[in-house]
Image (cartoon, rainbow, N blue to C red; front, side, top):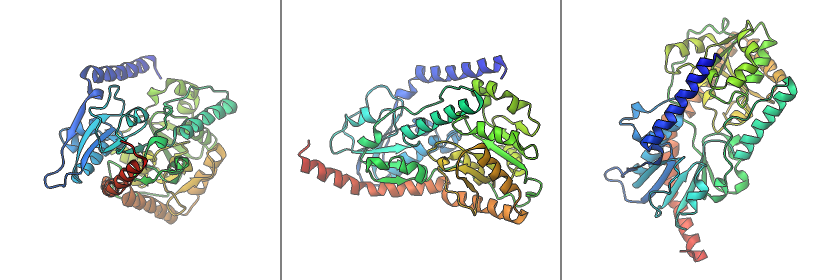
Length: 407
């Protein structure tokens, strides 16, 4: 990456954080009252992404990450069921706006601190948007160690999840991923509810796609944390497969150490092309998706694999790790037995050598699975069903509190 680009990226990120701090956005509280006619049920503290309730309309919400819209949908589900909802940002440093909540929902950073301030009868819900921190961080460190051993490249960890005891201190846990993510919290012995990850866009199935022409072209799409998401393995795999093409979509400017370490594979390998960041709502993204057969995503830990789901919506066949936390079976993709260069090469070759009709059938199955399970409507349904179960959990919590003689 050119030095001026790195400086511009860093300056823009710093300015964005500074503006938020000066405006006090991360310390604000937005209150949403129940919908008219809904029965009065109590008060909820929702600590997630405050931007999700600051936008004037739902259409104004950013789609760069699903948590913006999902915060909006979670707050709305509580309102629909008769709760007053106070929404704060998950990085808030000051105490909660009040301490008499019936329900407290939070992710990781403040959970332990705020949970201790709530009354004994308060139902505490840990909304886990990543795998457990020990799994997330441990798996990434293993990838970094393997990279050092394999290629002599030493990179620093990227966006590790802070240590916390949210699972231990919660009464109920919600997750966005599949059994991989769920099992990382099983040790806590708490009820776990899966709320299937949403996706901002749906696309028509690419009926006119030439699956023969696309059979040797593959795509990697992801955000920062490139070793965590397996881009190093993907680059090494395709560098040894000159008859297969790889297109990379991601903000490579954000990790200059990675781009320097892999510059020869990224920019000097004929069958590897760096597209950079691509807007998934734009025509260029659709052009790329329609020109490729599949996506490759050997992540070491995810809370729901949003990039994989976006690609499935676009009609791409997923080749992904178990840790990507997306439901994949042989009808719609390839679930890697291990995340290694050899395993990736085997999966890519297997898929490119299947019959065109079979490739199209797998793409349609992937597209159908995404449409049936990972839309905004599905998220709304899942979270509404979860909220409707909360009176049951509240009664149990109140009974336990009374039995223990807590006040």
